[in-house]
Structures are given as C-alpha cells and as structure tokens.
Image 1 (cartoon, one colour):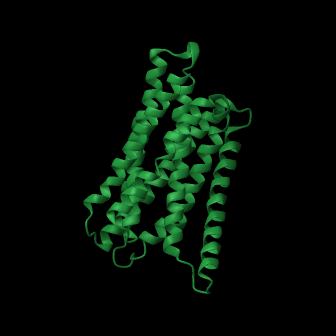
Image 2 (image 1 turned 90 degrees about the vertical axis):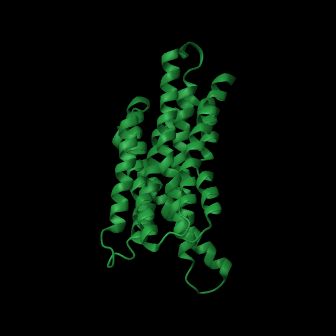
Image 3 (image 1 turned 135 degrees about the horizontal axis):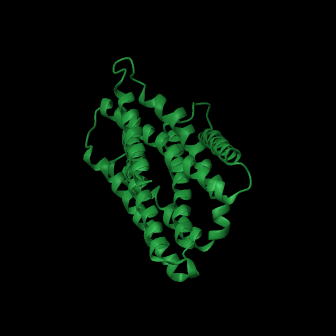
Length: 267
C-alpha cells in the first residue's frame, strides 16, 4: 500500500512540474503589447473551454457509467451546474468582502476578482485530475498489480501531465496581462498545480470512495472553468475588438485547438 501511495505521489509531482513549465512561458514575454496580451488571454480561454470537455466532462461521463447506477447525463449535469453555481457564489462573496474591507461605495476591484476566479477555477480543475491519477495507482493494490496495469496508470499520469503545460500558461499569461511581475505570474501559475500531488495521495488512499465521487468532481470543475472563461476571460480579451476584431478570437481558437489536440491524441 505504501509503495502505491509513493508511486501516486511521484506521478502527480511530475504533473505539477509540467504545470510549472507551462507557467514559466511567461518569462519569455518581457514587455508584451496590449495586442499580444489579448491574444494570450484568448489563448487561455480556449484552453479552459477545451479542457472542460475533453479533460473533464468526457471522463466524467465514462466514469459515471462505471461507478454509478444513476444515468451519466444526470451526474454530469448536476456536477456541471454545481461548479458554475459555486464560482458565481464565490464571485459574489469576494466582491462583497472586498467592498466591506474597503468600507466605501467605490466599485470593487474587478481586476482582483477576475484573478481570484481564474486561480480558483484552474485549481479546482487540477483537484479531480490529481484524484484520477491517485485512483489509477490505487487500484494496483494486491493482485491487481501487473505490468500492464502499472503502465496504464503511468500513461494516464503522462497524458494529464502534458495537458497541464498549456494550463500552466493559462494562469500565468493572463496574470501578466493584469500587470503582475513575471516572477509572481510564474509563482501563482505553478501554485495552481500543487493541489494535484495532494489529491493524488488522497485518491490512492481512498480509492474506493474517491472513485464514486470522481464523476461529480470532474463535472464540477468543468462548470467552474466554463463560467470563468465565458464570463471573465473572453469579454476581457475582446475589449479592443473594434481595432482588432479577430485577433483575440485567434487566440481562443488556437488555445482550444492545442488543448483538444493534446487531449484527443493522449486519450
């Protein structure tokens, strides 16, 4: 059992490292123009939309069919709406709290709210991915430990890890657009992936129980990501649409295409 948990920890540390590599792309953008920053924000939006289906909803449907007697479409719908509702409530709480702290009638800092929601949605997305890796290694206990099953678990970890590269960039690049230093953008970008090792260990330890709630968790994260992408990131990257009507849209399409390619290619 201890060896299985250690393997899950090592695998999820690897996926976190790839997230950090993706976040490090912000280092190459020293003084990006507003045009380039809109492109980056659009790219992040496309990544999040694609990941919400291929990395989250599709696996949620497949997992629900295996572990639940309820129809899979009910499970993913409930989880998806709960995730969107959670982010909406979180936004309201953050806005209310900040306005009380400021103790003024000034409009709350929308920039900070947007950053908090972005970080929260990506972090929520990484939790079920870490759980999925932990479950994959957790089922190797006892007689289930074979070379084939071990390679299957490693393949899942590699696939999720490679998908984490654009997700790390999807955090750090928008933060750069908000005016944060490259160092802080990288730190927050890689920090969003730190929950994966924690979730991976939990998944390996509680494999029977976690496997049952995994479909809900995956769909929940998808709902959270869609709300943030559609409500916050896409409108923001289209702020200069009159001057560059398709520039930010190019970023959205490119981010979606790259994430879709990685997800489908890596299974």
